[in-house]
Amino acid sequence: MATFSAVTRQHILQAITEYDSRGAENLLGVYGFAASRDTFAHEGRTYDTKAVLGVAHRYATGRAATTEELTGGKVDTGKILRKCGFEAAPRPSTPTARKRPAPQRQNAVPEPEPAICPTCSMTLPATGVCDDCG
Image 1 (cartoon, rainbow, N blue to C red):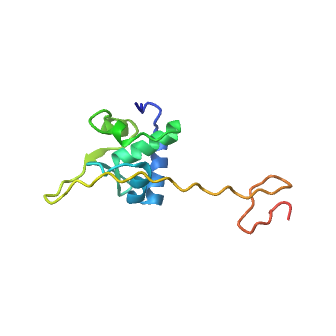
Image 2 (cartoon, rainbow, N blue to C red):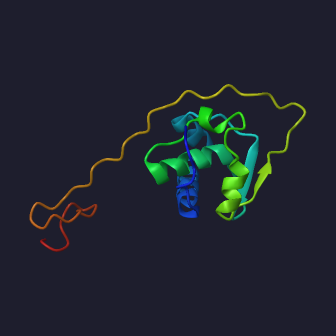
Image 3 (cartoon, helix red, strand yellow):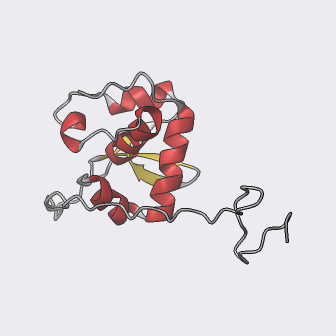
């Protein structure tokens, strides 16, 4: 069972950054979340509460919370967001809205290891030539 006592505003902001860079559908798919009914707004954009909190849990503890840990009233996502300075709001429902099946969890593509200068052990720039060693 995931606990969210370690999740801070900074962890949520990191999750928002990942949400923005991956896009909503990709983030939901990578972490195995279905679209939540609850959203919150930050700087004029709307975010899925459960997906962002699940990813924020990863930044706080090293393990993303699962959709099962966040559903069924087990976690008060609004309370956690309020504690961190955000305000949650229910997603407006539409009369023709259909419940989508949960996306299949996809493996995230790992970032490549950066090239390191063999002389000074600094990360090499994109040119591949060390700024210090030449």
